[in-house]
Amino acid sequence: MIADLHCHSNISDGILSPTELVQVAKKNSIDLLSLTDHDSVDGLKEAKKIADKLNIQFLTGIEISTIWQKKPIHIVGLNFNPDDRIMQEGLKKLINSRQNRAIKIAKKIENLGLSGVLERVSILAGNKNISRTHFATYLIEQKKCNTMQEAFDKYLADNKRCCVPLLSVDLSDAVGWIKNAGGVAVVAHPMRYKMTMSWLNHLCQDFKNLGGDGIEVISGRTNEQDIKTATNLCVDYDFKASIGSDFHNPKNKFVYLGMNKKLPKKLTPIWQDML
Ligand code: AMP
Ligand code: MN
Ligand code: MN
Ligand code: MN
Image (cartoon, rainbow, N blue to C red; front, side):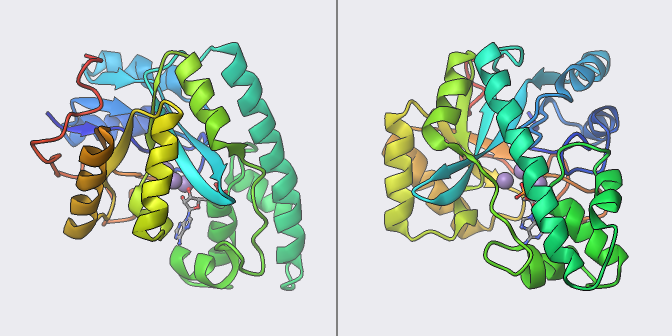
């Protein structure tokens, strides 16, 4: 069984449309897929339709930008009702805050000596859900840097000169929305927050107390040590294990849909009771 339960379409900051993404998933022999755009469920209907046609099992998904102990933590929701009213209202606020933040980031980038930033970035984002990824693409386009990594390292990473924090939702609220809509909540890429083990344990304990269901044990670019650490966290907190590439762009040769990695046998897959 090849599963990929974390990826992005052009509804958020990915490159492919939901339909194109599912077609690539088919090419990569994926059996079970979820589309998890940042703070948006708008691509799910389209993705489900083509997944049904191509005989791929599809779960509804989202990656919500949350805040916990003043730290940005991403929570993946899976297998929930995307029409749930409470979740929809919460997401509307998140998307509005993205637009306000984009205006502020654009001003900071204009201070680098560029103009018409918001107009161009809005086009790059298809006039919706502007993320830092779109600003990074713009900075490369304008030859202010050569790679995405450089754009983040120089200008857009947390605390760099052009970054403005997103007004995120509390971890507890996001978990509440997902559970209330009948889904499961998963900590996305736990090893990417660069937390000490003591902070990671604190996060897992709080997440467990809130009703969190699992953590991503395998994510795009996780190494063997990351997988070991996340496996131990799964065992210690009795979490189910998820796997997701965090695919955004087919040009990134290191992160592709499906990934060819398997969860450690002793862990319970997050999809165990869903299929
Ligand atoms: P935002 O949700 O607007 O704050 O943007 C965060 C997005 O930027 C993440 O979902 C990643 O896709 C991307 N991102 C963050 N850091 C990096 C990085 N160092 N290199 C490339 N992309 C990054
Ligand atoms: Mn992203
Ligand atoms: Mn993320
Ligand atoms: Mn992601």
